[in-house]
Length: 307
Image (cartoon, rainbow, N blue to C red):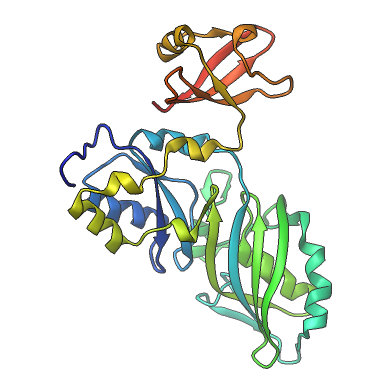
């Protein structure tokens, strides 16, 4: 990996530009071969045919996988109206065609606001959602279709970026919360327009606060390793938690906290009245990880140690 690089000391966020036909786990597997590291994780799964931002957690940062704040994600999606598939995207088996369906830009503009805000969405059969201990995609591959309860998901905005009435295709930018299926959103928009729709392309343009401009390809990462400069391209782990307020400990508090000792909450500066979760820094400015406030016990407890 280059002189000065160490599996024990290297940590942070490596933003990857996921190519099509790679699962998120495939990306992790390939990076393990390039970096010669086992301790890697990612911040959120992308469908195999989707491209775009996949933040990879390197070294001790991988401990943060299960505690990341729910931040809005952004996608650029292409949809074609007039047909449907079993997977709700162009790579599935065609299940319905609507030859009489003709969407206008005016009709699309009128429908989109219905899908902004807290909306109900039924997860697709081809998804990792678990029902009674079984992944839906496992049932779908066996030809089994079951009723799925609708879930509330958050869609912050939908912007029509491009429209081709002849081809009946649109390009949309979507900002949404965790658990939102973009292909299902597009399919539901098609139904609202009196027919059907399929997703033909998907690129995640923002995740965990990181954008496409911050992402690297496998080839670039390989070159960084050859030059021994990979550490320069890692984003500090605390950037994952910018949505949380920060606490800065004194030298004495830092020593106690670093040893896993609970601190007296009333003696920690910067604690907010209605906030329970924080990101914590030591007296030397180093990032400890997250902390949980317990007001009843007057304690600040170690949440996740990422140091």
